[in-house]
Amino acid sequence: MLDNNIRLNPEIIQKRFPVLELELCEKIAEVGSWTEISKGDLLIQEDKYIKKFPLVLDGVLRIYRSDADGRESLLYYLTRGEVCLMALTCCMEHFKSNVNIIAEEDTDVISVPVRYLDEWLVEYESWKVFVLRSYKSHFDGLLETIDSLAFKKMDERLLSFFIEYKKSTEKDYFQGTHGEIASSLTTSREVVSRLLKALEKDGKVLLSRNRVDFLF
Image (cartoon, rainbow, N blue to C red; front, top):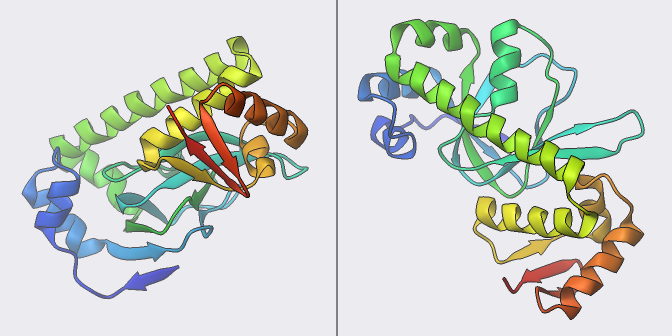
């Protein structure tokens, strides 16, 4: 993880976050730092206080929770132009983080000190709109996750996982092990391997070592 000393460009920030007014983008450029996060790096850790919240410039972040045994539960992905709902909630309440945020691929974010969150809600109408839209978007995503857990069979959940991954990353493949997929879906590797073979037989995916190519 690397913080750059290069001054952020307000016009680039506004291009990534078009709902924000130029004055606020200039403020973000002044107080924020451009952080490069390598794939696999942990940006925010569960049960730790958040000192800075991330605005995603480019790349993909994965938000998940983990239990005492190290099992993970995927919540959602963050892509360019987005901010983490869970991080904002913890910042506003001064709570420890209830999620982990990890780079799904090499990602550039603007790291903003948490003290500005409340100030901007009062000073900038566009920031309030941006935060409320983020809440709505991620709340809808969490409802879909709950519905998936409650009502979908595991093969439907697996396909939905790939569809959401493709939508978030704009990639036509998933690079990773069957165990990593199983961890995201809170199931076993054996179940995932069996279902992947069924999806391949149905012509929906193509399997190779540590890679799943999407054919849908």
